[in-house]
Length: 614
Picture 1 (cartoon, rainbow, N blue to C red):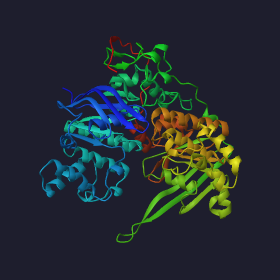
Picture 2: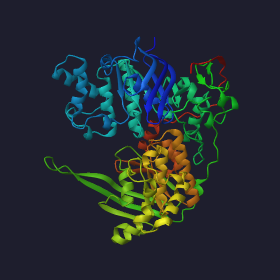
Picture 3: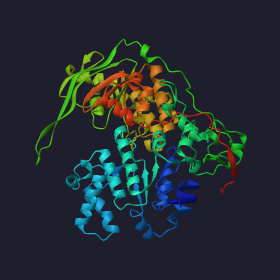
Picture 4: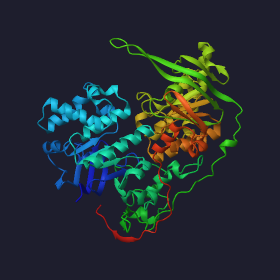
C-alpha cells in the first residue's frame, strides 16, 4: 500500500491577471520507505504541488485526491491538518535561515513541535531534542541546543531543519530543495543523513530538486514536471539514463556532464508557457525538437512502457540521446602572454570576539599564491568557509588584506593612490551569486546596467542609454525592457542583467561568484553558454567560483582547490579530474553527484496508451 496516493490533483491560484493553473491533473504514488524525486524547471509546479498536499496554499483552489494512510488531505479541515503536519507529515524547506526564527534558540523551536503534538515535560522535550540533534550530526548537541540559528553554518542549519522534521518520527518527509547552494561535501552529508534516517526510522522521503545528478544517485522513483503537468514518471534509473519524453531528454542534455569540456551546451529553447491559458495540444510542443503538427493540435495520451516508465507524449519511441554539440577546444595549447592578476603570499586575519567574550585571531587566508592569465577561466572550488569568496573579494578590492600582495595588470594595488585605485576598479568586475539580491529592486534595469558608466564618467545621456541597450542585446535581453524593474525578470534573466553590468567597462577580469548555483539546469546551460560566447567574442578572463564540479570541469581551463584558507591543488581541469594529487580533492570529487550519461534507446516496449482526463 502506498504511503501517499495522489489522483488527478489540480491547483488553481486566482491572481489579478487571471487564474494560474499551477498543477494540472497530476497523479502519482509514493511507496513506503522509498525516496521519491520530483524534478523540473523553475515554475513547473513542484513546490506548489507538495505545499497544496500539506494544506499550505490557503489562497488556492485545490481539487482531486491526496490519500495519506487512507485519508484524503484535499479539503481536510485545518484543525485536522495541523495534527498531521509535523506528527505524520513533515517538511524541510529550501532556505533554513528564513525558516528558523532568529529570536528563539534552535532547541526551543524543535521542542515546540513536541509540546504541540505530545504531552511531555520540558526536561523530556529537551532530552529528545538533544538526542535528535546528535542523530543528525550536530557536534556537542547538549551545548549547542541553546544556540541561535545565526550561530550555525548553512549545512548545520539544514541539519537543524531535518532534526525538526524528524523529531516526531513522521511517516513522510517532504524535502524542498534541501541542498541548493550547498557545497558538494555538505550536500553529500545532507543526502546521506536523509538516507540514513530513512533506513533507521522507516521514513518515506519526497525530494524536490533541479539537480538531476543528485536524483540519479539517491532516488527510487522520479516524476518530471513541466508547466504544472506530469510529463514522465517511473523508476529513476530508467528515466534519467534513457528518458522517454523529449522534455526529460532536454533537461539531461542541458547538463555539462553530457558534454566534452568546453563544448557548447544545448539548453531547452524558449521559455516555459504562461500558466494562465490552457494549451490546445501538448504544453511542451512550442519548445520540443521532436514536435509534429499533431502535438500542437491535440492533447497527448499517456504512454505506458514495459519498464515501468509512463510518458505524456505522442512519441512511441524514446528521443535520441545527447551527444556533444561541438568538439572541445584545446585549452592546454592556449598561449599565456599576460598576467591579469597575481596573488603572492596573501594573508587575511580577522579579530573576533570581544565585549563579554575573549578576543582571538581568525586566519581566513593563509599564504595564497595564484596567477590568472589573460583569456583563461580559472575555477576556484572548495567547501563553504574555505575562503573562496573572501579571496575573490580581496582581488576585487572589496576586502582589505593583512599581508602579501595583489597585482592587477602588473601593478601592485597596495601601492596605488585612491584615484589610481578608482581607475583600476574598472578592470575588475564581479557577477554575484544572487542576482536578485545584488540588484536594487527600486531601480530600473537600464539605470542599474548604466551605473558603471555614470560612476566612472564614461558616458551620459543618450550615449549611455545606447550603450546600455547594446549590452542588453549582447547578453540576450530585450532592449525594449530598459525601463522594467528586476522583479519583472526571471532568475536567468536577472543573472544576465548582472553580467551586462559587469561587462559595461570592458574589464580585464570578471569574477563570477557562484553565478549559476540557484538556477535550474536548462537556464544554467544558457548562462554558461553566454559566458563562453562572451569570452570568445571579447577576450574576457574569468575567475569562476562554484561548488558544482561538473560546471567547473566544463567551463574552466584550470582549477584551484581551496581548503581552510589554503590552495591545496592547482592543475589543468582534465588533469585534476582524471588524476587528483591531493586527498582533499579526491574527497570533493567523490562527494559530487554527477548526472549519468544519456544512453541510447533501451528497447522498452509500449504496453498501452491511455486517454487521460483533462
